[in-house]
Image (cartoon, rainbow, N blue to C red; front, side, top):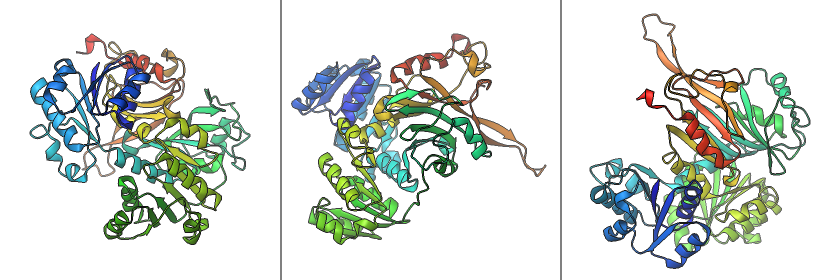
Length: 472
């Protein structure tokens, strides 16, 4: 595709890196020439310096032949105006726009065709916050992702000594949890992917990705690591957009303290947050943390705009006794250095956000995309169309399909008609989760959830699910 990306920040550069790696033609616009040069040194693309909402600059960038506009500058107004110009002047078929302010997202009619003509709006801060809240609610999970509107969840867990299944083969799970339907999609051992078989033994330190119906994750966690309580005390370091959103989401169910360095901002937060104790101070101040009872904190969340402060704050909190620590880290090179050693969980906002963008970029009917293992792997939910004549997968058993190397079918979500117990009531539709086995047959309109250990194989997966001309 021909793609124009507006904004060379963390999100824009991550989008460019992932799309350029999949053989798309990228043009990036930003007002900061040095930032553009930095991104262009890593990625083969065209760059233009200037106002991203300038009609002349958009035309110069090739907007008349553009397939997709991704507007992710720091300014909501610039992103929205650029989307409107691209649609009205150049008939760009699709636009994805970053919108951070709740003032815009609260009034969806502003984003519609009659207003700013936005096809898909994303709020990275909200996506990151929702991801963190899921991790707080499920201690012990490194990553927790939803598929099929929450009917199925994919969890990443590091096996530890004391887990009932550690030291035993995967097939022992059926004896431990006979009533739980699950599938181990992949295992990473010392960073190397292993395709799981029934006889594969789980060792301490293994990172497992398993799929299960919603609500069954806690039972599976108890098999892989010692039991952990959820806890009730949360401390947030940083009162920016993410810190404030997190506090609002968590203060209903947890006792929350928030530390903000800027005194004026701390005063604003104290007014806006109803059940959160706001403290003006430095989250890397050992005396402040000690005074506020860091040893009793169940979750310490470092979410400032500074990677180094987040790492230092989370590491200090861990040393002083916080049960679990999490840090937002924008520079992906830092993630592997600190996760699991200095701090428990490191989150890259760009990688969390990229999935929301990619599901609108992928070929075929893709319902969800999630990046895993710092972007090296990918989990995809793709809707099956066509029939036995026009599709390479419909009506075939999983073991009859030539899957690309490193691709595992983890589960299928199938909509079925169920008769109501009351004969007078009409039949209703409900989703059924089918854990994939070698003899499972794929049917039309199935939602197939795949795990791809090599991201470069995604294009082959898309071609496999493409519908032939006979379908049209």
